[in-house]
Length: 177
Length: 368
Ligand SMILES: [Zn+2]
Image (cartoon, rainbow over all chains, first blue to last red; front, side):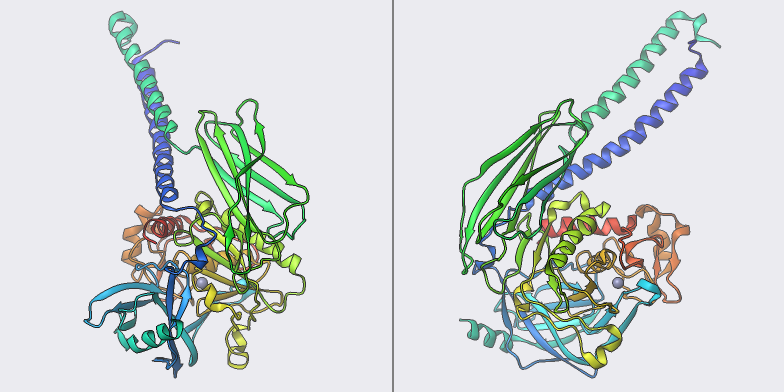
C-alpha cells in the first residue's frame, strides 16, 4: 500500500480514536477493578458467630402515630441484635438526628418517611400511591449508645421535631441488663 | 506532496506512526493487566437444602485474561441451638483444568448425600486466570432445619453483615408450598438482585436469609380495614437487615411501610424496585410516588434546571430531563428504569440510578 500524507493522517486518526475509546473502556474497567478491590478488602469475611456478639447491637425507639403525627411512645427502647442497617445520610425524605444531653450531634441519617404506606405496585395497570398513616406504631432505629438523649425527626428541608428519648433508652437498657 | 519523493522523511514518519501505534497498544495491554482478575458467580442448589439432600455447587467465571483453572473447597461447621459454631477445616472437593484458557466458563459439582443436620457449609471457588492471578469467592449456607430459634437462616452469605446489604425473605402465612417459596427465594437472588447489571459486578456485597417465622401481608386498598402488614414474631431479630421482604402467594396491591415491603413471591420486578428504595435510597420515577433529591447521585431533582445541569455528568443529555407528570419533580432516567416499574419481570436500573447503586455499595462497605 502506498503511504501518503492522507493515508498517514487517516491511520493516525483511526488509531487515536480506537485507542482513546479503548483507553476510556480500560480506564473504566481499571477504576471498577480498583473500587471493587477496595470494597472487598474493606469487607471482612462472614463470621458465623456474628449474631451472638454482645458488642454488636442497636436500639429501636417507639412512637405512636396520632392523627398523622408522631408521638413518643411510653414503651422502653428495645435493644436489638447486630448493628443497625446501613442508612445513607444523603438520601431519603425524612432526616433523623440524634444528640447527647448537651445537644451535641452524635449522628444523623435519612430514610423514607416512616409515617406513610407507599404502594409502588404499578403492575397490571395499577397506579402508585402514598397514604399518610393516621394511626399505628413507628420505630426509629439508633445505634446502641446510652448517651443518646434526644432524637430529632424532620421532613427533608422541613422543621425538626425533637423527642426526649433518654428515659426510654435508660429503661430499655435496665430491662436488658 | 507525496512522501515517497522524500524517502528519509517517509521512513521516519512511517517509523513514528508504527511506534505510536505500538506504544498505544502496549499502554492498553499494561492497563488491562491491572484490571479485574475475574468475575465470579457462585450458586448452590437447592438454596436451603435439607439434611442428606444432594447439593449442586456451580460457578460462572469470566476473565479477559482467560480462565486456566477452577478449584472447589468446602468447610463444614457445626452450629447448635444457642448459635455456637464449631468451625471445621477446609477440604478440597474438586478442580477443573481448562484447556485453551476460555474467556468464560460454567462448572458444577454435585455433593451426593449433602450434609447432616446442624451444619453451616461454606464452599469456596478459587479461579486462576490466564495470567496466573487468582480470585477466591466463598458462600456460606445452612442445612435445614436450622437449629437456632427465631434467627433468620443464612442461605447465601458472602461477607461481614456490617459491610454488605442483608436481605431477609419472609414467607407469608398464605404460602402453601415451602419448596416453591424457597425456589422463589433462589430466583430473587440469582434472577433478580445478582442479575441486575449494575449490581452483578458487586455480587459479593449481598447476604440473603430466609426467616423461620411468617408474616401476613395486607392489601394497600384495605389498610383501613385489615391494618398494616403483620410483622413476624421475631421482627426484632431482623432489624439489622436493609431489606425485609414479605413474600406472599395471593394477588395483592403491594406496598411498603415501616421498613417492610410485600411482593407476590414470583415478582422479581417488585423486588428490584423496592430494593432500589431500601438499599440504595433511590426515589420513585413515576408521578404519584415518593420523591426526594439525594445530595449524592440523585435520581430525582426538585427543579428542571437541576436535572438538566446534572444530566451530562450522569450519562444523559439535557433533553432527557423531564417532569414526572405534574409532580414538580424531574428525572433523567428512561421510562424502562426499574424505579419506574414493578411487577413480574425486572427491567434493570438506568445509568443515573446505577451511579447511586454503586455509590451506596461502596459507602456501605467503606463507611458501614
Ligand atoms: Zn417506589
